[in-house]
Structures are given as C-alpha cells and as structure tokens.
Image 1 (cartoon, helix red, strand yellow):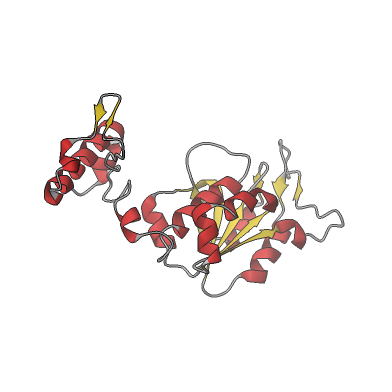
Image 2 (tube, rainbow, N blue to C red):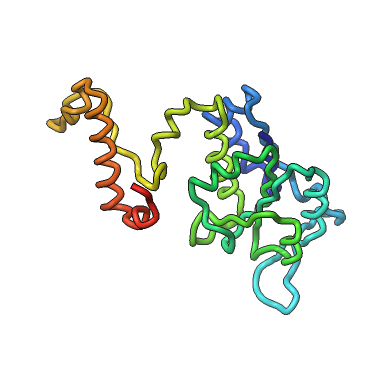
Length: 224
C-alpha cells in the first residue's frame, strides 16, 4: 500500500513516520508513506499557496492551482483522493477496512480558513475525524494513515486488531497483566482459570456491559 500526504507542513510528520509501528511497517516495505509539500507546486516566487477569500471574510484560503498540480503529478487510475475536512463523513473503524482495499491513497490536508471549493472536483472522498475544529488536516491525516497501516497484513498480529474496540460495534474488554494482586485489586478469577470458553464468554459479557455504559449508541447499530 502507498499513502501520499499533501501538506504545507511536511515537518509535522517526522515523528509520526519515524516511530513505533509506522516506522517498522515502512522499514519492512509493507507500506510506503510520502509527504508532499504543496508549496513545491506553487508558481509564485515566494511559494505562496493561499489568498484572501472573494467576497470578504476572515482567514486565508488554499488556492486550487498548487493542489491540482500536486495531485495530478502522482494520481493514477488506482488512486483514491481523500480530503480531510470538517464537512466530510465522520471516520469510524469500518472505513479503515474500506480504505485498506486501495493500493494508493492520496490525502489532502486542508489548512487556514479552508480551501477553494473547486478543489472538491479532484476529491473522491471527504473525511472528518470528529465534530471539532483543528488548525489543519495534518493530525487527522496521521489518524487515518495510522488506522489503515496497522490493518495491513504483517504489520501487527492479526488477532491484535480482530479483538479490538469497535469490532462488532462493541468496545474492547478489560485486560490485566502482572501482578495478579495489585494493592488489593485482583485479576478476575476467570482469566487465570485456564478455561478458554469461559474466558471468551466473560470477555464478550464485559464488552457488552462496557458498551452499554459508555457508548450505548453503538448497540443501536450493532448486531448481537
């Protein structure tokens, strides 16, 4: 899988690309992630990529020309172009699996007050990571990339993400490690019983109960 991220702040991705699971996935050639500086496609001597909005209003707006040129330079028939924007579809786990089917994803990071509306003609999918406003699309693009990469075969053990939160519309079950007794708080007996079927049932019961308490909205859409 290849992910190209278009941004005006490529330095923001240095830690993200050089740490933990993402770093190992890149080193093992399981995924390729590139940051592309939109300013490199500006025709202005000062590499300007934004201007004031027509009709007035506060803030600066990303101009279409540099983004068009950047996308056109890397887009192929197999590419999916994603725009990070508050007006997009709210992101959820099932979308991560859907995006996993694409060999090449291009993510455009919005910034400033917004983007020229004509940029939408380039876009296949608009995504939001929640109903709040950030300075730009860089952090949301990392969220999307991280959620996809960890699902790529070989990046982590398959069991690790099969049993995670939001599988079957349920939150994850409680987990424990050593010591068995920590300040009087003991690990549930069922987990040290060695009875795998009882453990499986207990974990499912805990998932349902935790979801009822914390995210009952998930149960409305779930199939239990």
